[in-house]
Image (tube, rainbow, N blue to C red; front, top):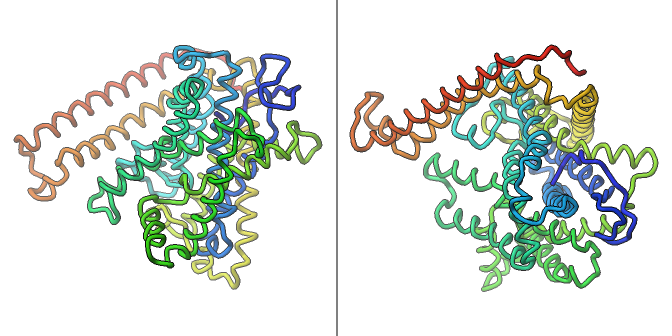
Length: 479
């Protein structure tokens, strides 16, 4: 369950999954290659406009990035838990597991968050609202929606793996039903266009949730048992992949739905129900590429080029984080509205490019900066961890995190109050009756909930500040 692949690699002596001579987690260079391809495509996705990507058929190759990440997460989850020796929920949900995930994912994201705040203060724009509760950065950068999804996986994956070992087919079906149910919830109760800001917030919460992407994760989990494309274990892809291919053609061209009749109506209904292009309608196509990669690419890295690709795959999470920050600067430099409204700016028009071919050097520039920054960040963490103890255990860094948490608790207090006001009707009351404070049966519950939120977050802030200023450590900075 890792994007960055920071766990030690151990060679597998057997040719098939599970045939190892030692109870050590096997290493798959193929997964690092898939993650490296995925992060390269992510940077491309954020460097090109939708018009450009649509004209080059991006759905069939460039949009494989997130499905690759999700399926690799599922595959890694199975391998990690299998070789950990854990068999029940009590063993799967342990402090050592959560500590590893916090160090690997949460702490680097906290660094990004602090960098985003500093960047916003320097530029003069910060945005804190109810979306802050979902993990949205105060100075938005493309791709930050993936982080809450990743954090949610930390909580969900042990349960999914436990269920899969008990009832694999039933667990797969439930994972697919997870997205279907959420898609139906949005289709029935939150149709487009949204009538209120609260509806938009709820839909965003759904689409940034790991439960929305469980079909892709489940496929990776399934392939961890046998990744041979032509084995009976994966026979369903003979049906699933062609169906996905047809749906993808219709998604990009509207060819099938234009036929009319029952077939056209069915495809139109499917398109209306299933929102987005990261859905179970398209994962079968990506699954075939993943299995081909697992079968064709060697299991160990040999040679300088393969070792470099391995480094990119292992550092993919840090590259993603750095890319978010870098592209936020690029977007702001080109168009402030892109950061305000979370959209990709029309680079060619705004910058008055003479030809769309300039997207090529533009993308290569963003890719070079993102790879260099992410790899340097990843290597800096590794180097800091060799100075006697892990970098995150040093008092200087723990003090920074405590102070950062204290500041963020006040930010979250404001976001929580805004969210409470929306769901309890306080916001609508103020719009209708002005800003005068009137306590009645309508405003009372919202005011009490807001007061409790204020007390909680202020108390939490004081605890974190106390911890920050009572740490004692004379060790030097480990860099």
